[in-house]
Length: 377
Image (cartoon, rainbow, N blue to C red; front, side, top):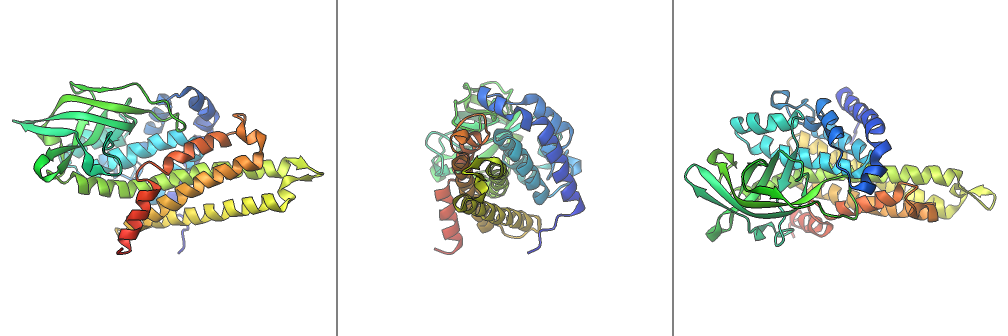
């Protein structure tokens, strides 16, 4: 199918690209080395409307579509994987469920500030015993009068240490394993975070454990219907998988460009190494898989924008783009040889960032299960 971009989509792509090259790429290595979350950069992104690209203007967004948003994720991920991850988590995992399942009052109170860049959002699903098996959730929410009392811990939570609002899941009907979603302001009494994790990659993205010690939220902070949280977060993850596939694409594209440029200028045996068939084969495979990944991402995003089912295509994109990203970054290091292993070049950072995308928002193993079920297996 034809993926020619509209004028509006191309404008968003170009605007985000220009910003990322100026405001993100020059600092990405430093942020990675020192595990710095770029607060001021996110403030600038909010002022420019990036944090609300796919949401209507009346809710603080810019009225873009999923394709536009994925183009933006790719450009930011191309400059810095960690920054791209935090951007994607804010939009896809925190803002999206507010937009899709929130009441008008909830959207005005919580979505508008997040989409307009006045705050950062986070999504709390994973627990020590609840990862791929979200049904293993142990965090509880108990109704007491006009409030819900939430107790538990959430781990590996992106943006958790800087978020103003967290959308999280908790068990509300232990007998039926009923799970509900809640909107939790992070200034609520009893809410705290542990120190940031020391991570292999995505080090410019903040990742913490959330601690909820009898956190009280108003009854109206229940998001959607009671005990509908499982269905809601599956829907949320479908959209998130499309966007995080675009992040994989951005990281992989950056690694490929580094490897291609290096191969053309690196001389061995009187020729640039790009003239050797073994290197050409690597570059050809990288280019092919990048092209196929881009097609998968854009198709899934387009289906979303058309209001058509896209669960299967989202898993296709997530699985293929994430594994392509890791493989591309690995081969980029191989092309650069010893230089690729050193921090003087970005490809070693690209590889460390890439691996997370095979794990987060549904592992590669889970994507294969989703695909098999969509096939009727």
